[in-house]
Length: 91
Image: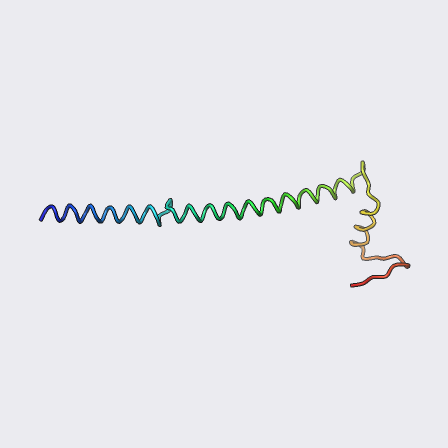
């Protein structure tokens, strides 16, 4: 009778630890979720770095040391909503 209890307890502990290794907080499924989240965040980081580079370029082009008149004209028209008399606007 004692050996049956011992083996059943050992079997139940084995099942518990196997379940914990697969489904637990530090299990295999959680590790896959974390890896997928890491990949998604890496892609978001790349997109944000691209946007930052574009904004830094626009900021540099509008700075006092390097002034791009075409960009300044475009930004002023965009903000003020104005056009010249000889232009045609298509929306």
